[in-house]
Amino acid sequence: MQGFYIDDPKMFPIYRAIANRNLAMLLHMGDGRLDFSAPERLAVVARQFPNLTIIGAHFGGYRRWDEVMAIPAFDNVYFDTSSSLAFIDIEKACALIEKFGTDHFFWGSDFPMWSPAEEWQRFLALGFDDGTNQKIGCKNFARVVLGKDL
Image 1: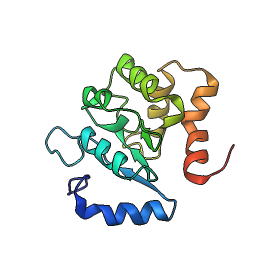
Image 2: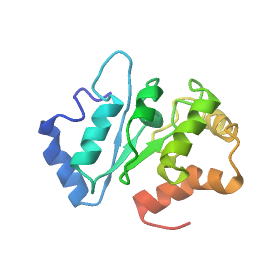
Image 3: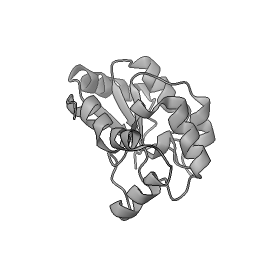
């Protein structure tokens, strides 16, 4: 995915330009083989650029979810549930959503690698109420990225 450390200062002019244009930035997050997008690196970028809207794919760190639990919540950081629900247990997924808040999660902003219908069913299996499912399913993305309330 990203072949660079996300907290490399060489990237800061790009992040600044994205923030100045009020755009959102999606980052591939987590990988046990490489350290380019470790959750603590996301925290560095979030602190450095509080006006940058950051979306951390894969619950903020694919298969590195304990590390995600260790970083603080940031107003400008959002997480996507994409391509993770088959690999994360329900309790851990719900704990992450509880920690960072239902207003800070999206479904599908980083494409589901498998069947979207199956991914949606996995998401529904987390057991949230219809209002929360709608927020994470589409309303949060519309509000944060598109600037529209649905």
